[in-house]
Length: 177
Image (tube, rainbow, N blue to C red; front, top):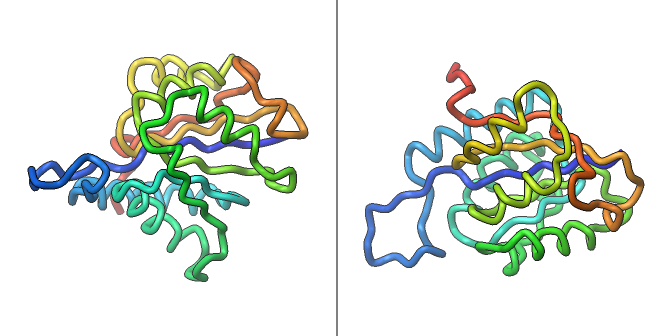
């Protein structure tokens, strides 16, 4: 069984018009969402074997904030690769990156952008727990985290509708506390 976590970066700031899209940082709302997501992921004992992250500022900052909690404060405990191909990637690119994941990786976290991430998640999940698939189809907001399980032994076997959407959580569902 393989487990894929798809995370859309947290909310970014738009208050500096001189910045291009790639350089936009997290907003204060995005930083709060990261705190909530990190707590949620820690409570669920989510500890990926590998993180594939877009190199955009907002995705890097999202990962940096999560990594502190998920790695128990040990820098580089969870290996992360910043993949240029993930920036605003299409679903076909995302699938190619997933299929190329190392064979010893059982849990993979991919941090990216919409619209590709939302479309990719919808293509991979053939069924879901409860109403997760319907909620995902409505919107994959910033800070949204989808958990997709695959009953296969290798990432190269991952394909359309082969996964089970085990959970889909968004920051608005998480309580601050």
